[in-house]
Length: 84
Image (tube, rainbow, N blue to C red; front, side):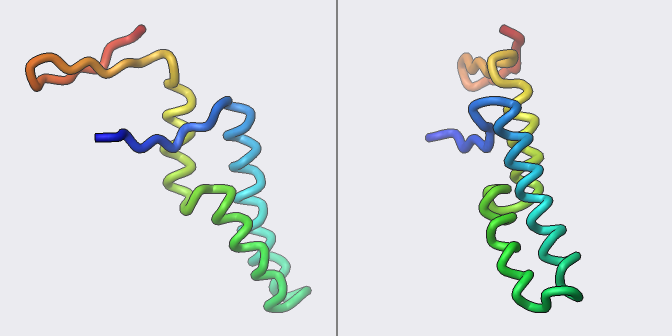
């Protein structure tokens, strides 16, 4: 079974995705009184940058931080998380 990963290649890349994603979502709402419904075109940009949802981005942040530091080892059906 393939493991689903939300991690980015680097911490910098992941943080940039977060700034773009959360910034676009905030901009879509903040600019609504100024620009009108046209500002909602920023919302899909934010959703794409966050890969679907803010929670997915947060999970990816945790995975990116732990990448290369933690390893899951399974022996006889028992899995443990160990440091590398």
